[in-house]
Amino acid sequence: MGKYLLKRLGMAIVTIWAIITITFVLMHSVPGNPFANENKNIPEVVYQNLMRKYGLDKPLSEQYVIYLKNIARGNFGESMKSNVETVNEMIARGFPVSAGLGAQALLIALIFGPALGAIAALHQNKGPDYLSMIISIIGVSVPSFVMGSFLIQFLARNVQWIPIGGWGEWRHTILPSIALALMPLAQMSRLMRSSMLEIMGQDYIKTAKSKGLSKATVIMKHAVRNAILPIVSMLGTTVSNLLVGSFVIEKIFGIPGLGMFFTTSIYNRDYTLIMGVTVFYAVILIAMLLIVDIAYMLIDPKIRLTEEGH
Image (cartoon, rainbow, N blue to C red; front, side, top):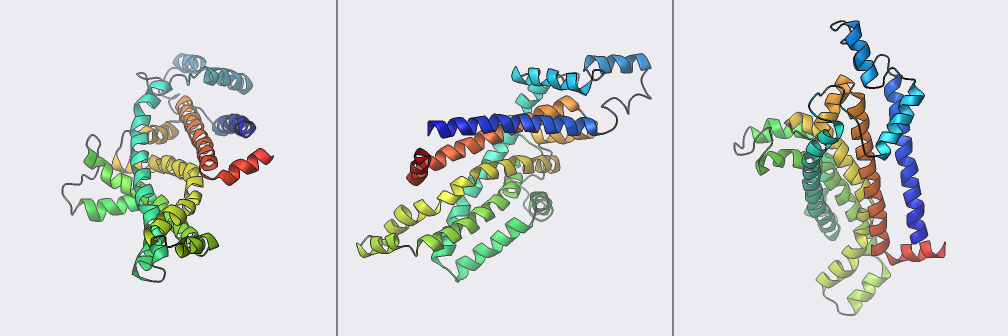
């Protein structure tokens, strides 16, 4: 297991480096720079000073090396558009909001997704199964930002105690959390249903039933425990989808999270903020994938034996 974790950690470091490099190259491939549009409104001397301050007058190779050194020290630099906060301070202020929203959406998906899938499998081709299929189709087909707009238009305007936008109270999290949670909820439901249907036909389930175990014991102790393994394996990508999806959701609902900073930085071509948020999210998502791998190995002994065999 130790060798496997070291291998995964090495792959994670290489992946983060690749993300940094690709983002850096793509960002500087676009013609112009963050101050090009302002060049007509400011003196040439001021423009040149700004370029020099942020190192944009240096060759790209030198800028790249300097940025790698700064990241290694955990310093994302100064925002090119904000004179008040550094990129580190903006991340520290915005990420807790985004993380709280994503965690709430993930909790909703984890509670209702597997439960809905298990109920559908236990009532195959009956009412609960059809209802689960309808919810799954809607969740997978409708993007989160479309669902958010739909909830604002048809739910918030008719239910006065649910605010349309803003941030500060728990009521402000209801609509964006539901909008974010619906797609992973639908995916978990479909995956749980298919996994449960397969497991309920296995020999060890029949053996458990023949031993006189109650239906609830067979379902919870044997069926659900094994059927939920595929959901554990998809948690890493689920978290990444929630974080990326929150970018647009935060813009729609006016949530002061990191996603709003990121979308604004793209409009303003704020290089340091774009790079800082991208690298920050990359580290978190890769760390989540590593944690999911470890959790999957702990839950399923067969994976541990396979890894030890290598």
